[in-house]
Structures are given as structure tokens and as C-alpha cells.
View 1: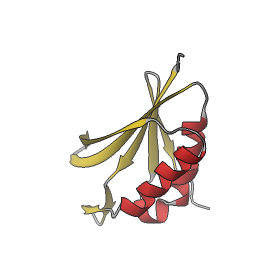
View 2: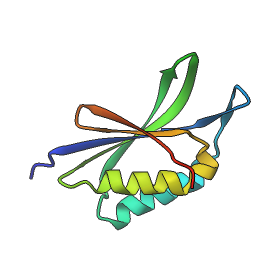
View 3: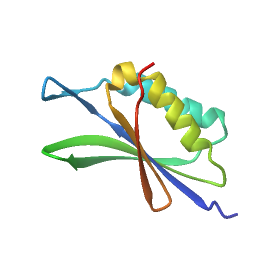
Amino acid sequence: MILENRYVLHIPLVKLQDDELIPIDIDEILGDLKGRLNHEGLDSFYITKVESHYEKWGYDEILITVFTSGDLPERIFRKWFIDNNDILGQKELAYEIANELIIEKIVSE
């Protein structure tokens, strides 16, 4: 078996509020994302906590790495992120496909 697509889903553990980084209570919504991935048959993935840097900020984030033959991780992640952005409080979402980093602005409805 060859799973040719590698996805890395970037989940920040902080949000920027009033020029200050505020921790996000991620446990419940992270469980929801894992459940959505499992429900779609993506039951083998890796979760890593990393220190990220952007502009003047250093912060913790979780990376979920999924290998698959389809595009399910991208679709699931984008929907989950937008559904939970009231908690995440981000202006953009980010994920990797193969060797590319995709950063998408989140459009408020």
C-alpha cells in the first residue's frame, strides 16, 4: 500500500487578543477533529506539539500529520477550523500538502 499524500494540519494553541497571546482551551474541539478524521476512515495519524515562530511571536501549536490517497484531511480540517474559529480566534488557517504550506484567510460570514 502506498499513501502518496501527506497533510500536516496546523492548530495554534493561542490566539492574539489586544496584542497579547491568550491560551486556547483546545481539548474539546481537538477531540472533535480527531472524531471527524476517524469517522471518515482516517484512523492513523500523528500528533506533535511544536514551538512555532511568526513575526515577533513564539507560540505552541499542534501539528497533525495524516498520510492518505485522497483529499479528505484538507476538507475535514478546513470545515472544522471554520466551525470552531469562535474558539480558535484566528485570521488565517494553515496546512501543508506534500511540500507546500497553504495559508488561507478566514472570511467572516
